Length: 442
Figure 1 (cartoon, rainbow, N blue to C red):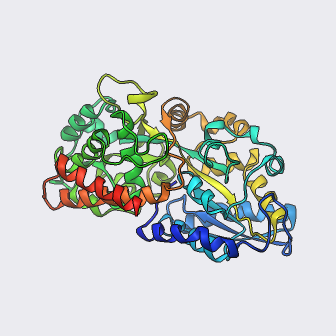
Figure 2 (figure 1 turned 180 degrees about the vertical axis):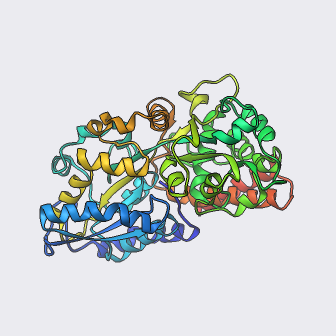
């Protein structure tokens, strides 16, 4: 799950009303559809690889394989994360969109609330081999509790701390930091404050979704939550203020993040890491991107995201990742429901799950595919253990995409302050979060 943008919020508000007329044709909510174009499907894929060309190269042979087996041609469009949510919302409002699409799993409840996506009831799950094929925690991030999921899991991911082994050796550092205090200390030892073009830690201050993922974890470590049990926003609580300040202070106070990272929003931190300009980066399932940018197996190490001193990875203060991943959804108004279900079944088959998740360095959310030895390496073992023991799902509330926009923007603005040398204080952080909460109410 990944990026959204400021214009997505306004679009989401209008979608529900527009859907009353926009989804009047095609498939119904229970899965009955017309199938007027049995030999064609359109598929919007999210940008998972180093760039769109890499995704087309990875997915092309698999889509050709599906066509050879079924006679159904799949028209592929790979959409950058910066555009994907807006494109989905516009398609939901107009009724003119793809048959099948990828969505960030954190958007599942928001898009489910529009009514635009096919509910995955028992009948539809049977068409792809059954619900019990999937890891339950991944299904838990596919829609609101108590409702049929709005999508099925495609790629499972978790955040990790990636570190440059050569840079660590040269600095005489034997192991990656396990706590935030250790990360700052390590960062000050290994980085040179940009004097030689090297910094300790990469970040993406203008990447709204990544901002949310990072501060969500820190909020949980501080005992906080951005929504209460009733689903109402609680953005400016002391725990959330402390979490956001801690994250921005990696630039503002600790100075282990370059000021220029305040403007990063399109995976630039991964390029910096691969080029040896930073020694560490906090990211989700990044091995495939590192390789695409020229790194080789063994150039980097993978460790759990740090936790507070005295904590261990696990529930509560030990939460060190959100449950990350990509889900696959079907638009309710598809005119080829049978083909769409066959395609989802193909992409989530044991065989394809092994191929696709190996390509992208992610974890298969299909249980049987996880037994492949390709997923037993150190990188993926860290990610799998994190998902199993210390990851928490982002709130599955209808306002999640608006949460990404408002709070993600607040963090972006605070990074801009830090980069410009303006003070980032408890009061300034609280004011930004209070403003974000007010925006949610409007």
